[in-house]
Structures are given as structure tokens and as C-alpha cells.
Length: 416
Image (cartoon, rainbow, N blue to C red):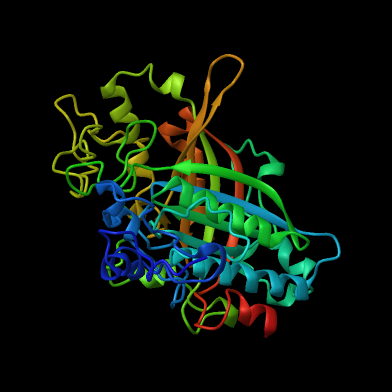
């Protein structure tokens, strides 16, 4: 294939082409299937235009932490778990993580997956693509690395609200894909699945979405399918104790988890028909916040700390005793905190026309036994929201720190 930076269509300069795609990591002059990955094929104004900021945004693969943890939430997500194939062990797992890391690096830079690229994302830029890898409890026995399995990866306890489908829970390996373009996200999913052939097979896969960046007049906290502002109390990277709460310290144990985190993944079905029968005031009492703004019922704006002791003219608590916002607060749970980074999902309707929809809940913490578990136990005992949701699948994964340049995710575990 011709070098498109050399044989540019009339009206598009070589500088314009490089500015359009090169700055976002797309190799216009690459040989093979990827050549001309984001070039224009005619002289129409739309095709000559540079990538918009949505497509041009790029997240780095290499770094202290893996991408997809503190990255702003993307519009599209795929969660997929794999089990190692029969006979596959540590050697095969290391080769797979090496392949996966190389593919993720290329795709996050807006480049083709490889020589057999499917061209699904040919015309797009990186679109804030992130790929994140984690290890499940069973991975360590399958690879003979039981002594390296973290205590924090012990199975989660049973919760009263659990109605778990084992076929859609856990897994040896976990991959989180996020992007602001659906085709870019699918392209990554397909490329990683192809990379896994012979070494691992898909155990389960879930698709999610969020509001697209730029869809609101100003940046704001996302809403879930119940229409509620969701994520107000998330820890902020600017907070002094953020890293301590979310990431394993560099001196932590085991050593291969340094700068990593633990992801709890839950498929939470929202019983939307029941929820939507409630009047707005009743919905707000369940959550403890105004539906319109996310502000606490005690007053202020979204970021105002709720006054949990405030009462109305009848002497009743303004924020009900069983309100979700009250029960889930860190200061009501011994300081337990987690970084929630979910996707919504809708997988059609059942035979009665009831929507199979809800939240692909993903939360991050340095230790799930001090983050997710105490909060969920308390929610299990008296959260008003519990009657409107159902936990249908669950997983816990150890997500190591980011890969060094020239290395791959999990290298210290698999080669240590």
C-alpha cells in the first residue's frame, strides 16, 4: 500500500495529515493493513477535517498504574473474563499477557492491532481507549503461583441481596475495556479475544455505556438508569489519602501488586418497573438526594455534606435513616472508601417485557476487605434501595500496577 503521507489527496497537505492523525498516535505511514488508518479518501470537507477532540484523546498504556482506574469514565465499556485453557499454565499465561499488553499499547495509541487487524476502527482515533488487566482467585492455582496469591483476593463473603449466576461470575483473568467510541471499544474486545486463542477462553462478557463526553453543557457527575446522579462521594485524586485508599503501596505485599488495586465487579439489575412507580419525592427519600441536582435532602448543592441530624417540622429526619446516601457514606462505615467507576447496561427485555437493565458496578480499592465489604454488609442490612436492585453476578480481581516500557502487565508475578 502506498505511503499516504506522500500521496495525499489534493487539498490535504502532508502537514495536515500528520496533524490529523499523527498527534494521536496513528501511524499513517505504517506498512501493511494499518497504512492510512485515518486518512481521507476524497476531498469532501467532512473527510478533510481533523479528528475531533473526542476521537483524538489518547490515554497512555505505560505508567505507574494501569489505565482505566482514574481515567474519566468513557461512553462505552466491555467487561470480559477468561478462564485459562486446559493444559495452559504459567508459561502460556505469561505469553498471553505479553501479547495482550502489546496489543493494548498499539490500540490505545490509535494504531492497528497488528497485521491481521479487522479494520473495524480504521477511521477513528484513540477515543480515550483504555485496557485494564486483572487476575482472579483461580488464576494462581492454574499457574502454580498459589504462594503469590494476595490475601485480599480471598473470595467475597455471601451477601443477603446476592442472587448470583456462577457462570457470569469470577474468572481466571479479567479485562476492562473503555472508550468514547463504540467501534473503538469493540475493536479492542475482538483483538484481545483473538489474542487469547489457544491460551484462554471467554467465561463471560458484559457490555456497558455511559453518557458521551460533551453531551451536557458542562462537565457533571454521571446519571444511572434510575435517573439519579451517581458517584458524588467518589474519592478525588486531589485528596491527600486517595492513593492510600485506592492503590496498593509500592512497599506493599505481595511485591508484584505494588501500585496496583483490587476491582470488585458486580452486575446489579435495577428493577426499573418498580422504581418508576414511585413518585419523585419517594425516589429521593430512598436515595437521600434530590433527583434533579444530586444535592442532599438537607440542603445545599451536590458537593455539600449532608446534615444527617436535620429534622423537618414533624421531627422526622430529612435524610431518612435507611437512605442509600446515608448508609453508604465513608463516615458511616469506619472510613471505608472505594472509587466507583461503573457502566450502565441494557440487555433487552424478558418474556414479560421487564427490562434487563442496571449497573455494571466496578469499584477500586487498596483492600476490598476494608473498602467494598464493610459498605456492602451495611447496605445489605438496611438500605432502602435494596428492594429495587438485585446483585446477579460478582467478581474480585487483583489488578497489578502499570507496565514499564518494554514490559507487560503482570510481568513481576509471572517471571518473578
